[in-house]
Length: 199
Image (cartoon, rainbow, N blue to C red):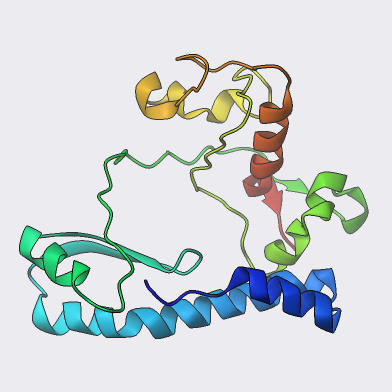
C-alpha cells in the first residue's frame, strides 16, 4: 500500500520523548496495525463489492502493509492503477507451508532468557502473543550450519528440494562463509520461540 508508517520518524520520536524500550514494540505494532487497517480498507471493500469472483486466497499483512491475493489478470491491472497501491509484485517463490514441528514445551522465567533475546526485546512481543509459532523464517547472512542442533530438524530442505530452500550467494548448498555469524543470527531469529510456553 502507498501509505506506510514512517519507521525512521517513529524512532526519532521515541528518542525525543525518551520512550522506554519495552514500550516501543507495543507502540510500533499498534501503529502498524492501525495504518494497515485504515489504508487497506478501501481496497478490500472494492474487492468484496466489485470483484468477489475474480480473486481468492486474500491475505492482509500489517507489518509490511501489503495484501496478497490470487486474482485474474484484469483484476491485477485494476489494482495496479489505484492511487492507494504503491506497486504490484508477482509472487514467484510459492512453496507449501512447513509442517509444524512438535517438541517439548520449555518454561522460560524472566531471569533465564538468553541475553540476545532480551536485547531485541522479544519478551515484549511474547507478552502480546507473537511467538512466531508455525512461521517460515528467512535469513540472508554468511550462510548457516544446517547440522546445528537449533536448525537441524527445522531446516526447510529436510522437507523440500534444496533449490526451494536455500539461496546461497557463495555456494549452492548451505555453508558457513568466513564465520559462524549466519548460524548465530538465524538461531536468534528461531530462538526456539515456538517451543516456549508463554505464561
